[in-house]
Length: 154
Length: 154
Length: 154
Image (cartoon, rainbow over all chains, first blue to last red):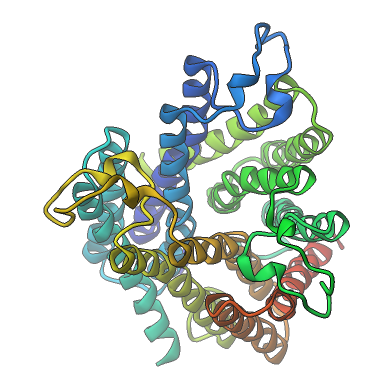
């Protein structure tokens, strides 16, 4: 059977979870851009404070960190520490043929907790809240990866 | 049909785009190394300023940031915010069977704009130029991802 | 033949190498957490120094960098510059049907040198030692990627 067909509900589950997470991840770049435009700063490269068509009234201060921009960069870094691993772990997980309900629970569960974690981080909730929303996603990632490893070895 | 065969022009298109991007991404590590050697600094860890066979005349200044090294690190960070997502999004895109010409345009288009973006960043072009070369790649990534999501849901 | 079956020794080799590397990568997040708890600091977000149930005696100093935490962050950054590329490059490599022994040597070789590199980085060995352990993994990654590219083009 073709494991990489959207007709296969297991692969479709993975494809939905993976594409949602990629769209989420890519959005952080755009959110950084929007906040840099609104704050008129938070840039990173020396050449970014040169006057240009889109930045006619440039100033050396534009390269200083801005809180609202740095927050998105931290969220993006947090994504990069987890999403690329999830994208591959999820694919390996579904090709080993787990029960569909289990796959849906774990993959959509990961997506849901990551989105809630994003909201908590964006709105600067306490570290405790953020940790509580980060942990299930990480445990799901570890579980689906370890399960594939066990199946591959045995 | 075997979707993961290089005899399939769709998969071959993806494989070429993906491997070019991986080679590009990995090159940034080597470029960082070459620039650290040439600048004799820009290191990051406290232990990197200990005298060793390859660094006999070490100095505490070697751990200070060097502009030419930091530029490559920023380029590498920019890669990491996009390439891992592209690598998975591209695979999912081709297994959903898009028209070959569309796949070639989008995947090679992403590669081309990323390489141009790299040249613009390396040579410190203005933010406007860099943004103009970054945007098409990001839009391609969003498009191929969203298309897979729609196909998986419908 | 189903290339994504654990009955295929090539795919099983990849699955073992990939899952080991994902587990290694994810562990860095947990190691960061453990060290932040032990050092009672090294946090990153302004809201992390608010008093909470898990951090009742909070202090503004908790947001300052801590050496033992920053070391793990550097190791994690090093992982992120290589592992996501390896995870995709390895998959493309095995679906192009290399000899099993070659695949085992290269993929397990990558895993072994990354784990040794981790030990060297964690214990603050000299830059020379770290470089010696980093280089083979990067060369393996370049080789398996370039090989797929050549096969895809020819």
